Amino acid sequence: MKFAVLVFPGSNCDIDMYHAIKDELGEEVEYVWHSATDLSKFDGILVPGGFSYGDYLRCGAMANQSNVMAEVKKAAAEGKPVLGVCNGFQILTEAGLLPGALLRNKNLKFMCRTVQLKVENTNTLFTNQYEQGEIINIPIAHGEGNYFCDEETLANLKANNQIVFTYSGENPNGSLEDIAGIINERGNVLGMMPHPERAANDLLGSSDGLKLFKSIVKQWRESHVS
Image 1 (tube, rainbow, N blue to C red):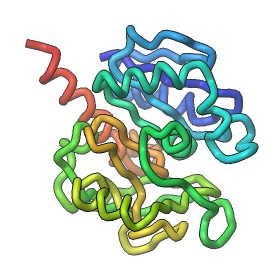
Image 2 (image 1 turned 45 degrees about the vertical axis):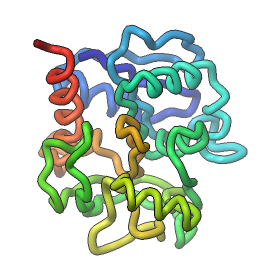
Image 3 (image 1 turned 120 degrees about the vertical axis):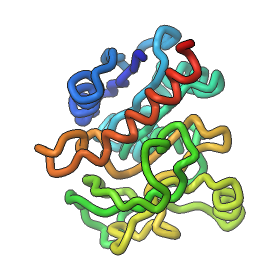
């Protein structure tokens, strides 16, 4: 399986994502600059964290205007897995690929530490290697990770089982319903604020994030390798 790691001006988690895929997962991966106009050779798209365009205007708003986002939308429409982490999650909401918005943390402070997540839905291409209700340790590093949506959107997220991860015990940023990660209705686009790529090896304090990437590969191989 071949992954693209998108790189915007201000991305700072692209190297972490690349390392997780190449060195921990053992799959093919390439950096792709934001001006790219073709992602057709890639099987999965990874939108990493950081501060794209300095987080000016709104987090992710300027990145959504980059050439590559038209290709990300095309890949999503084709059913390819698209993962957005932290700023990548913000970009996906700005692009309309996921509902809702990410607001300033409730305490108005940037937070960087490991938190516990609960796996709410294992019937996705991103979570099939987890157990239902499994508690995992994943780092966060964000100032605007407070997930918000209107009542109708929240009802739809619940009805369609689109809430994939919630914060367990402590809600660090004030997210509605403790939401830490959601998927689109089709199930091939995931956005999450915590960083699974920073939890891909026990030397980093946790390897719980590696299961997410293994889930993607497992689903892809079952669909593409006879």
